[in-house]
Image (cartoon, rainbow, N blue to C red; front, side):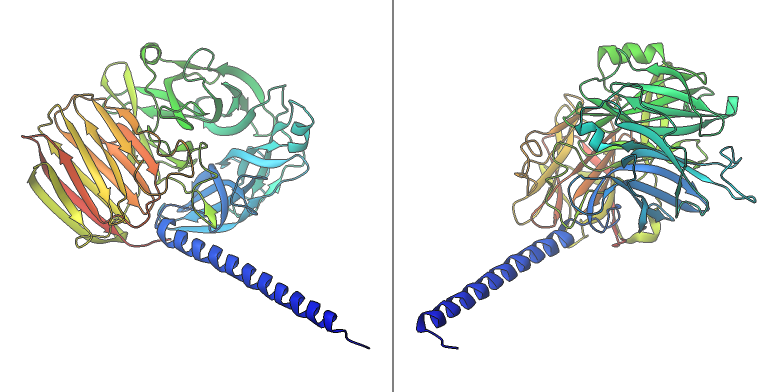
Length: 535
């Protein structure tokens, strides 16, 4: 073989080009790895559940059994953005430390697996339990994307699966779907409850901008009962993820039924949020209490959370408490920007679990209250307490020498409120600040994250402060909040007003301060507990 000089030169150029391409690819891979490592350490929650990698949204099929909480969730296992939905699965003994499990439900010939619920069928009404086994029944929406693309309105149907090993593995019902689509484009998210009075199952379904109620004795054959929602509540988006439960009215002998409905968009501060209705349910139809309806018509202020990042929340089946509340958990994001948030290789977290109670300050005027539920004591590494702090313009409550603010729970009581603003500021040396607090003159809470760090991935993320009303005229304000790297959950007035929001600071926050022009107000009591890394 004869080598020409020009061939040698070409070979050398080709080798150099290949080497350069390889080097460039290595640099890009290294750059991506460095980015993931930074986001992992800076934003991965310490104790909120998040998948190890890829996309997550709505909580699904949650139940409690044999000392274990089961959380299923909308999951795309191949990408960090929304795609073909599966049911992911995680378990916990205490709602703080979570262990991710294998995927529970995969797409099938009927479509991908959208949201739904699960119940413990103790009486084996379904007939799936054998030799004394207690079946767990999951009922969910199948979404046929191919039928949707072809223009069909019938692409969402309801199906079921059962588990005989406490929710670890599932068998799909051979006769799926169990509820056919009657011709409604958005027909999804079944929530199943047991109605003790009539010894039957009730299923609540989101159907465009109303909810529908069905009944069954065996969880397999369902009969339509009634609809709810026409002309009441917020209708600025699609209704999703309904729930229904009965609660005692705290301090009375009365009980009422509460109906949750998530909506996207239409939230009080934009994008996704969850509204609620209080009334009565007779086993066939839900009717809103007249006083509640009158209040809602005057001003719709009935939201489980006024922050931008608590959506699609529903309650755990088979869970009870001494106060007879219900256990609720939501998705900690918002569809306005959920697919753009700067985290990898995962996207999204769940809120902490909350117990919902029903209270009234005057007869016939009902309101949900959220109580942070988890037992944090085993995870507390440090506690700082202060009392009778006078407020002098700007007061530093704690800094990094005192406590690590990347995981903490704080409680405080402000007394002698004046007609001015009380602004709490979380700040770091990078110049980032997250501001939240209370304007007593306007009787309004707020969160302002426009200078909280990374905000330009979305036009709406830091565009304007989120606002929430105060529902009491007390001159003392009780505040509790939970910090976990990139999120804050605020509980005002014992959970009467709740605000949950995420943020993405360029470095951990180092100081917590309170700024106010008040002259007589003071912090009666302040405590903050540092939490160990859990997950």
